Image (cartoon, rainbow, N blue to C red):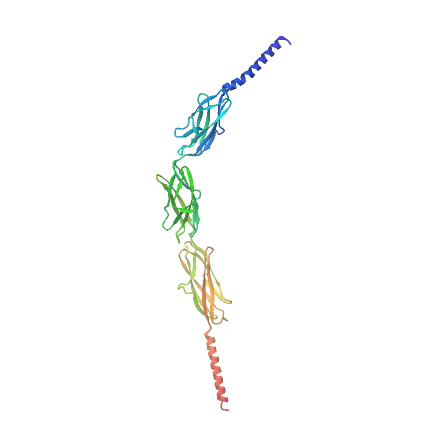
Length: 384
C-alpha cells in the first residue's frame, strides 16, 4: 500500500474512534436530568382542576438534588407540587433512576379564553414547558339555561321544560326558585322527580331542573312569556320561557231553552231550533250537522255546514224533523250532532208522535156507524 493512501486511512480511523468515544460523554453532559409528562398541551374549561404526573429522570451517575418550582403561571392561578402526599420544593433522585411528582393546577372561574404557557423548572438544570388552553370565556356568576325555551300546545296541556342551573362561583350555593308567571298560571319546579322551591348546587357544578307550566282554564290562544329565576345571595340568573297556546276546542249542541224534546204528527214535519256553541278558546271551522233517525224519518238542517264559529260565540241552526207517515203513536229518539275536525257534540232529542186528526175523526165516525147499526138492528128485530 503506498504511503499517501495509508496516511488517509489512519486519519479516517482516528476520526471515527473520536466520534465513538465522545458521543456518550456529550449526551450525558447535555442531559443529566430530564423532566417528563405525556400531557404538555391540553384544553379545559374555566374552573377545572388539572393533575399532572411528572417524572424526574436522573441520567447521571450521581445523586441529583433538584429544586423544583413553577414559573410563568398567571398570578391568580393556584398550583401545588406534591410527592408522597407531601408538598415539596426539592427532591433527590438516585443515579440512573426516576421519581414522580404531582402538579395540581386550578384554573380560576373568572379567566379569559386563550392559551396559557408556564414552566416546571429544575433550578439550574432543565425545565418542562406546559400549555393550558382555556376553551371559553370564564365568569363568576350563575347561569340558568334551557335548550328548548319555546313550546306550543293546547290550552289544557302541561308544558315541561328542561333547564340547567350552573353555579359558576367558588362556593356552594342554595338557590331559591321562583317565577313571574301571569295570574292563574301554575309553575312547578322538580329536581329528581320531586317538587322543590329551592335547590343546592356545589361550586362550579350544575343541577338539572324540570319546570312544569300549566296554563289557566279557558286561556285564549296567543304567545305567553314566563320568566323563571334562581337566586342565592349576591348571585342569580333569570331565563324566559315561552308558551304558545293554540287554543282549546269544545263544542256544545243544544236548544235556546235547553229543552231536548218535541212532538210531531205522523207523516208531518216539525221545525226545531238548534243552538251550536263554541265553548273553547279557538275558532272552529267547517262544522257539519248530522242526525241519526228512526227508519223512514228525515232531518234537514239549515245551514247544513257552519263555515266558521268564533270562540265563545253561538249560532242557530234550524232542524226540520219529518216523521214517518206510518209511525204509530209513541216516543222516538233522534240523535243530532255537530262536528268539526277538532271537536264534536251530540244531543239526544225525544220526539213524541201523535196520530193524525183525520184518523181520529174517522175512528169516531166508525164508532158512531157501529152504534147506529146496532140501534137499527134492535129497532127492527127487537119486537119479534
